Length: 319
Image (cartoon, rainbow, N blue to C red):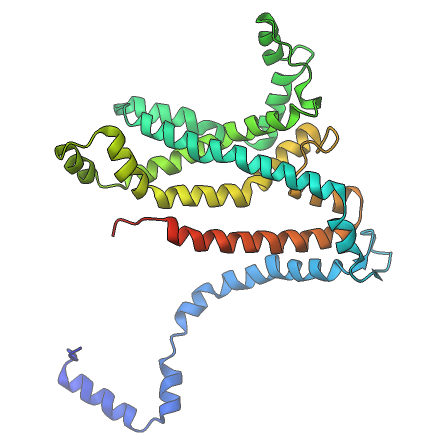
């Protein structure tokens, strides 16, 4: 590339650099300012994330009941063996898989359908329609759990009362080993639906409408445009929602499980996050909780790495 600097300035710089050694010149050219901008974030990340992570890994090799006056007893890999061989871990893994599969419907499938249908609504009605869908996402999990507990109560709850008028008796669904997990899924899915619709609507708004217009001029129908143009261009948004759902489903359900069912009945609603809480703060077994946390961190890190790698291959960008 041609040097466009004024000749006097270039000559002055050349004279200044003439008396500087090559190593010192390279050090002087290293940009420090960008690193200073991110330094506070890196320090906080190390203090609040990676330092506790290292302490958790250290605790996984000890037996400790969280009392400061009690010493830490080395137990080697015994905590890992007890966690891996427990039936609670198997139940939590199965339930976590059920949660992830069900939430893919609420966070990906239904938001795509609702966002596409909402394009038929115009003017202020579209804004009101999207706001109604998004409002449940703004409700705090504790408040939502309190309302749904009242709605589903078998002693005068609104939903069982209405269904009984149609001859349907759902009983105490939150105490049912088969129905409690689906109640948790419907409540959390109801909350997360608005977020998915918002993200998909933003993705659709970013698609250039000229592609659809050009395809319609060539004779393509609505289904062909959706299948061959809209969904491929929406693939980065879909992959993002899938990645979030798989990695965060267990975390989304934690507040509802803790407030409505406490993991029961018979561990039918527990998941990996709630199991970690039970081991650490209900059983007061810091060593096993550390081992479980370390295993979950490794598993979710590998899963996230694989999903990010696949997302680059599955996404189609309009560039």
